[in-house]
Image (cartoon, rainbow over all chains, first blue to last red; front, side):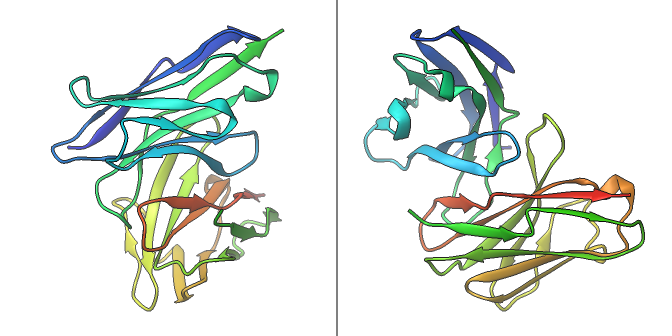
Length: 113
Length: 114
């Protein structure tokens, strides 16, 4: 069965530090992979997506993610954290356009000054 | 980018009443819309998938008679929580998908049943 695992329910970094949020998936077919961000009491905003083109995907707000098939991973990174990056981050996968997303459990990112 | 709206953003109702939540794709035609439910500090759980003009497909454990979904047009889907009870209190989020693989999410509706 397809699934998504986000390692670490809570990640804390200092402002200016590297952000690394981990996501692994299991799939028997090539997946579409997504990272979404959710601020309190709001919906989800798409950060970036992988759809079988370039393996290094650049998204909004300075985030990027690299698809590594051999590791079945799609980790999210940002070189320098800002206070405004504090939010909940969800990794998600789908296997066909127009089908529902399977979400990871989410990672809460805290940024301290 | 694609925009999805939800209305209302927040609703408080009495136990036993019904509540309707609207989800609209504002600048694209959504062939498929999805309804998710999110409990505090948890991930999103898919409730149902709806395609325009056809009956919704509900996930296992979701009562279709309690959560009525209508997808009457390519830009509008509605979720009606019938005879709401306090355990139905949650954050309901819709998403819409056009011809591509990306889903765009609405801002969510906070339902509180007293």
